[in-house]
Length: 282
Ligand SMILES: Cc1cc2nc3c(=O)[nH]c(=O)nc-3n(C[C@H](O)[C@H](O)[C@H](O)COP(=O)(O)OP(=O)(O)OC[C@H]3O[C@@H](n4cnc5c(N)ncnc54)[C@H](O)[C@@H]3O)c2cc1C
Image (cartoon, rainbow, N blue to C red; front, top):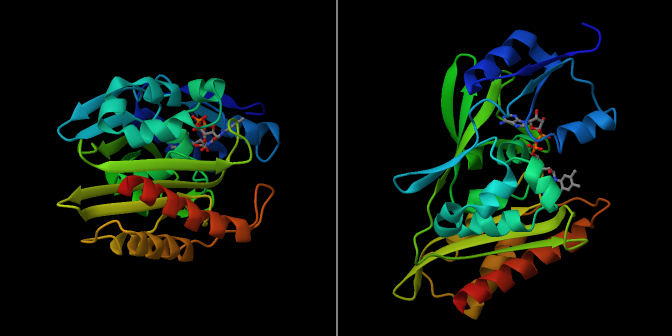
């Protein structure tokens, strides 16, 4: 097969079966906004492409206290969903700031996560909300917390014959406080230099649960657990916020690249976490 083969999988199981059959020469294709850029740059040439758009993996529904988002759901559909706006507004806010309308029409949530970029913009809100992924492989399926999914830049626990079929996102309680900020070189069509999602439950004036997630400041999207722990049981006052912001920055291990220096990213991490927690303190 010199020029390659193209398959339209009719189900996640069929896609996984095709991956198992064709091994390392195969890649799944969702919106193509990462994959085709890499192919066009001749970073690799897949011999077999398995398209996921007809695999029944697109759509958003509610199951109990969680939203189930098909991995092949375009970002623009998630952004426009009244269910997402109502139940997980933190995710909607992050997607709104991604890329451009054209890229959001093609790009999918599963592609963004599977690509495993440290700057993947859906990863920070999903980490803060405690999302998990349904992975379907040739031999069965498993559920993996997103916090355990990423292992390095472009790397994850996804097996060679596995695909992400679904993202499960716990709904935000109506009283929960949240904020998201993306720092990029431009306002649109720009990868994050730093992104931060914060999420807090507050009862009786004290924090009863908190999560702080940062993007583009470590080899993987990062859940700053020690920093969030410093908020637990506390009032969101100036000293508590400053301590948490400092701890969040200490958890980062950024690099210099074309978009920003490690020095800037560490300082911006602290500043943005501080800013967002101060906003939550109201
Ligand atoms: C101009 C431009 C601007 C961009 N701006 C942003 C931005 O602001 N923020 C951001 O985070 N990203 C940005 N991106 C990156 C990209 O658009 C997103 O990561 C997008 O969500 C990728 O989804 P996709 O469906 O296009 O993935 P694809 O390109 O189809 O796939 C990406 C990778 O994931 C694999 N894959 C896809 N779906 C699955 C699945 N369900 N299971 C397993 N593996 C899968 C593919 O094999 C491939 O390796 C930008 C890209 C471009 C070209």
